[in-house]
Length: 259
Image (cartoon, rainbow, N blue to C red):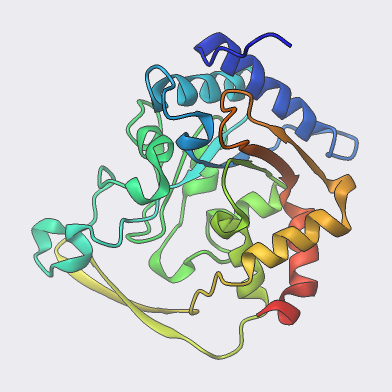
């Protein structure tokens, strides 16, 4: 087997092949759904030339060639100044970092042409033909529920691509939380512009996500495509791609058993 060189061309071919695998999960007539990506740079090796830049450039190119809208979470960093100070000058801005989502996601946020939703804590970034439709109307009250970008992605039956990340990072699983939520709510706060915004949302509990995702893979292997990330021979990192609607249907049914 020839050695995989993690350069732009090889990575673009690699991502294009993954998207084609994802297309095989889509029942006919096949559409071109958006792609929600969770990515770990370390999955591609610690010595990849250029770091996150060639990985992201290749991913964007592959999505563009397949006419896909690329989406990544851009949730606020827990220690960000706009979350720890009531100074309105430190309020949420679209250029605020999201390094907690990983270097690839934060680089995506800073890429020309990428747009970011308005939620001060739980925003998403997107690039592609559906970016405005996916990101619009993301008010604090919509959170990660059915009126958020995740809800639009569910309606579009987006593909979820996980590059070296565990199920605990899969934001789409929060939709199962909303579907199964009772009356329990928590108060949320963030500075927005010159004012403070307070709203209620469900309490997020991701403890069950890994077990939920693993159960989905085990019980429905035909609904998952996966494989190794060839750029990294040391950690044996893997990728997986699933349809959002099939994952959601399973998790809504099984979530009460795992929480």
